[in-house]
Structures are given as structure tokens and as C-alpha cells.
Image 1 (cartoon, chains in turn blue, green):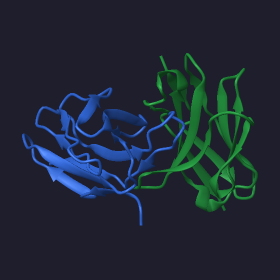
Image 2 (cartoon, rainbow over the protein chains, first blue to last red):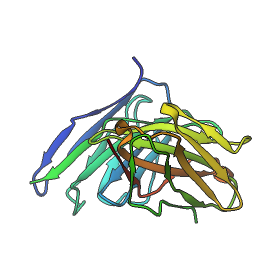
Image 3 (cartoon, chains in turn yellow, red):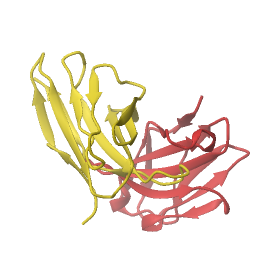
Image 4 (cartoon, each protein chain N blue to C red):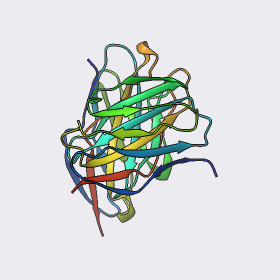
Length: 114
Length: 115
């Protein structure tokens, strides 16, 4: 059953902690993305990766880091430098090509600072 | 700069009536246009896309959208709404000129269908 899996579904972070959100896909997609969703603001791009061992900053990369060591995996670390990390985080993947392919999304991780 | 506008935060419609969710866009080149739907605490699901060709695009669950180049719009429509259509809808655009890699999403429109 092909798809994209995010874990955990809910995550609680204490002030000053780093936390890592997992994203795994078995769709054989080259491109992977991380978005942050806040109420009324739509989706904002944090990082994206077009190929293994390469990734680019999106619009709101400060306080976040990623790695792309395997094609299937694109974990996101929310560092203590991210001052307002409470949000819904979405991972997506897409078959690379001419840009006309749609994205497949995971079910999301809701991160809350306690 | 690319942008997408969904002018309505919320759309209310009675079950069985037609629905329209509006989207306008701004890109320098020719666009790829997409609609996605999101149910509570879930990821986005793809509904339909416009790439080229026929301006009327048909997608999943009976939805369709019309690409209007002169008005730079891509409104989502359905002839007869269902209560189960109640969800958050996102319009998205990619510019063909930059290889279409970066997708810009609108802020979303919440659709309420009343029984």
C-alpha cells in the first residue's frame, strides 16, 4: 500500500528542546517537502528536497533543519531556535518531472509546546 | 511574485445546491493549478489539476474547476453539494517557467454544507 507516513501524530515539546518529526514515503518520489500550517495562513514551505543529499530552504526555514540521506526519508528537526513552533506540520512528496504532478501528503504531526 | 488568493474564508451552502469556491492567482508565466481538500486533523488530498488544454477540468468526488486565463481564476465547482463535502479547500499554483517546483498555496476556504 503506497503512501507517505508521518510520525508521531501528536508531539509535545518542552521549551528549549529539539524534536524530530519523521516522514517516510514508499512512492519512489524524488521530491519531498515540509510545510507548516497555522490557522488562517494556509501552508508555508519550510524546506524541500529534489534529490537525495540535497535540500533547499523554503520561506520559513529559520529554527528548522532537515536531512535527506535516503530517498524514502525526509525528517524535520524543530530546534530550540524556533520561537513559536506550535503548529500542524505536513510532509509531502511529488514525482519530479515537468512540475505538473500533484503532491501526496502525510496525515500530519501536531506539535505543541508545553 | 507568485500568489494565490481565496477571497472567502468560509462558504455556506445547502445540501443539493451547487457550490463554488473561488480562487484567483498571479504568476509571471503560465500556471499549473491545483485544488486540494483537507478534513480535520488530516493531510491534504488532491482533487484536480489544470495543466493545459480544456479549460474545464473534472476531478474526484464530482468536483470540477474552470480555468479562466483572462480573469486569472480557477474556481472550484460542484453541481450538487453533499454534507460530506464539508472541509477545508486549498487552491495552489506553480509557475511553469521555474520548472514548476515550488507550489504556492492559498489560505484555504472552509466549506459548510448544511443538511
